[in-house]
Length: 83
Image (cartoon, rainbow, N blue to C red; front, side, top):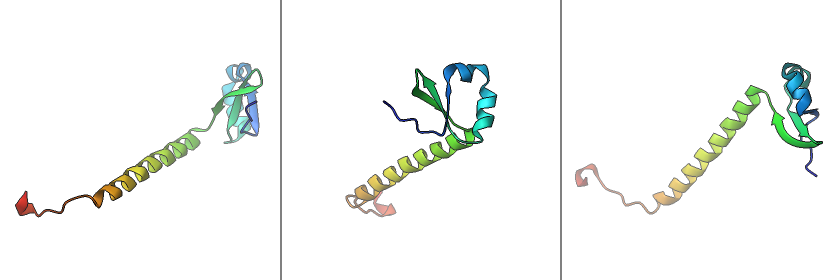
């Protein structure tokens, strides 16, 4: 069974009935959306989604930087005149 990673949960039917009320009741916390008592989605505030997206982007950029740092040791140094 999948654990529910949220303090708040609601069925898909509850979500369809009144999504604004769910968001308001959760007060900025994530809401687990359940189907047959299993989490199928999480409803999160826009600010939380943006924060998570920024974290992912930062991690991807960090990985690019680390790869390029490793490649830098193999680079050949040239002057502008040599180009």
